[in-house]
Length: 145
Image (cartoon, rainbow, N blue to C red; front, side, top):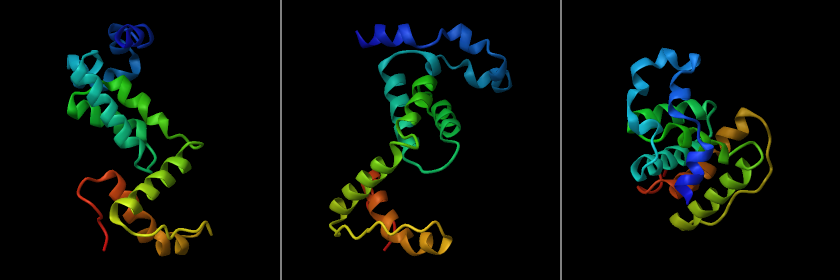
């Protein structure tokens, strides 16, 4: 059932490869796993898309596409799942990952929302915010002392 649903809603492989915008990529898109629906390809596309969705940088769709090409994962699903974190959903997702990170490393929730859009505030709060967030998404634990 999910496979038929995805086949109905995903674009045709030949139509995607015939796009003028994709011609510069040339041989990179020749891999059949990039646009094929099987367990490995779809699971890899989901993993790539969700991983990149939680990186707070611009150009997430491009990063997800490059990662999907490198890992031979489904390209369309990878790029589509990046949009799970859009400007409306990003603050709750990042706050939730911060809360999970503080729980994982056993530190108290110390963030209070006194936000100032300055570089000084960002560097002063960076370690307090980033350490628990990184612990929530990284299996190796905290990155900052």
